[in-house]
Image (cartoon, rainbow, N blue to C red; front, side, top):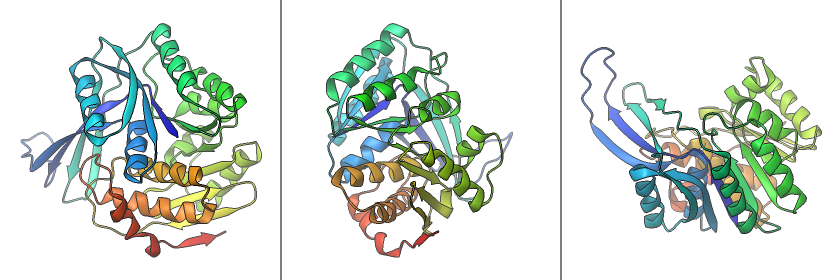
Length: 309
């Protein structure tokens, strides 16, 4: 099973406009409201591929209830800690003319150590050896930086594989515990290492360094350019696909969801990489935070070029 942990989930409200008129009136062409947050997006992708997934984390208020109702409608199992603080709302502005999405993400609210301990107890109870636990997304404001690192260490010691996709010091400390797989994007990897990793050779050098230090799989997503897949012994470059753009929100999460699903199935790494590029491209073709169907992804797989570097 793939257990996803979202400590700071959100409702994603996507507003589609022809163009943005800064300082003026903008007419919305369409809007949609989706259960969001990176870990929840991963669960959505795993579910659509036919995998078994459980979403854990923290929700609250009417927005939290709406988020849970959406997961129920998608058949995604969940077990959240409920608080009185409403789950945040993130706003996505899809500009049709530029084919770009601008994000306005609320920070969320701080949560107590007691609530975080309740989340950990749910993780510890649900996860079994052989499962994959995926920590994705930002933590609530004020959360101590070493929280996820401690959880990663405990899970690995129990024979449970761990995926880590967060940012900043929380990511840095988590990587030091050698999770099974990490998935930063290019900008996040640059921030982690304090320098602009603009060139492919620089990204590969840093990713190899992380792999040599004990992370089994390092995946760096590059937006429309695809992704780089690094292990101790191999570097693959999955070239991006040119597809009609619905929304780029959650494309990296769809990529990761596909990877984790195929890792659980034991597929070869190159095939896993190829399928994940197709998953990310299929997500880009969808509006808002909705996740592509398995059939949409399957139609793209044969078009993906994987290059060994």
